[in-house]
Length: 377
Image (tube, rainbow, N blue to C red; front, side, top):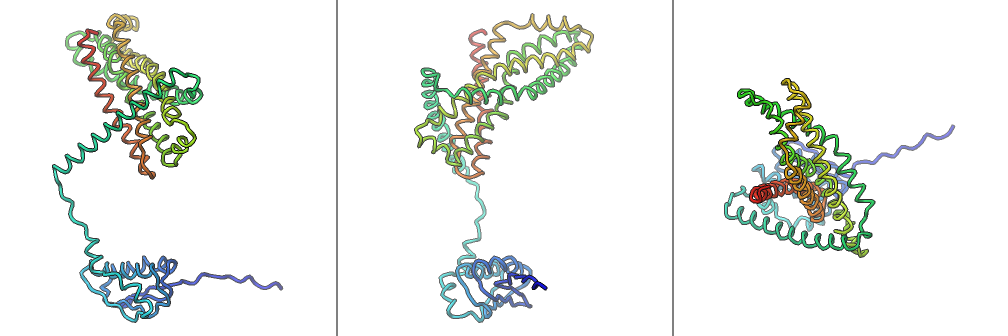
């Protein structure tokens, strides 16, 4: 008969046992041993009033063991008690001599956060100035990269540009169609309630056409672009920054802006006006459902929409979409290139790209609204 296999089990390198007010540590208090007993020892101190730490059974103690002993003593002091070491081998005492548990316990106690208005205002102002300065630098560098792309279009990464345009444009059509149709339907229905009181419900078509084509179509499409594509740009480039891929591009003599930012901004510039027209189409279709529900024909609705719009309204809305696309894609690339280190930095850059994009959209929309009014457009 063949001999039975020998089963080898790892015996614990260290043990911790609490008995009354005494906590006993035994075995080898090295990295592996401390890992085995840390939770048990600290839990024993939390549950019972330990006043004696018996170290007579310790066979070996290094820095990890010293950290465990200090943690036990600091936890006891924080609970308002005191603990006394007992039976420690004099050869191991030198490991604990440099540490003062009372001083470490006081250092661990954190002060209550104090609110300081001048300090908060100063920090916010400095952060705003730093972001503004970095943004101006990015605009200059990006402008230089685009000038080089215009002069040498054969160096543009057209394959990546087309792939990004498909991701940001064609793949966004379902959500754009859904939001557009729902917005058109809801706005038409809500505006019909007061207009019916005056017998002017046919003017739903005029209101919806002007609102969507001139303003809301470009605005909502840009918001969707910021949440969907701007955040993706920041996350993609931010991950490359964390993985040192941006530094690798620089080392190989490639301009990260030309390699990463230019294709994304070009793709956004190409697809955003198209998405805006698609959004307007579905918004007007949603409004048509409501108007036809009030007894008007689709032909009448279409005639009212066409009569209420001018070429200036259409061009103005598409121009807004074009400007918004540059802002959203540019800020997404900028936040991605400004990413720090660590996975949390990628999340922060993604969030910042969406927030900054929405702020820039609102500011630019206000500026263009005033400008169009002053120009009589």
